[in-house]
Image (cartoon, rainbow, N blue to C red):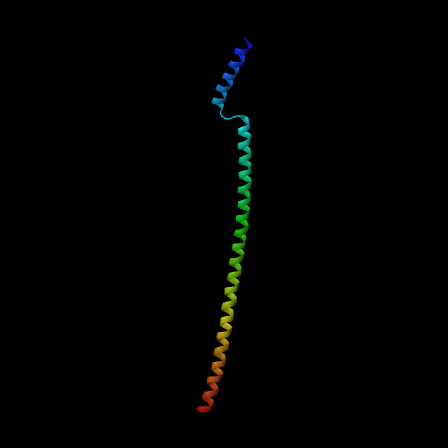
Length: 96
């Protein structure tokens, strides 16, 4: 009679497993996979944030470089106009 009881118990366990789904170890494995995926996603988000910070810093540096370039070009242009003005005045006074 105990053999029939064992067989009935096994059949009932199989039936319940089909109803419930995978075994408990499968849920543990899935949970570990989920946590590992979450950790990878957090690491990726942190890396993306660091890269966004670097991009913002480069934008600021580029804007400063452009301002410096504009200032330098204005200085050179003003200096050239000043020198040309002096040369022009000097030539006019000598020949006219």
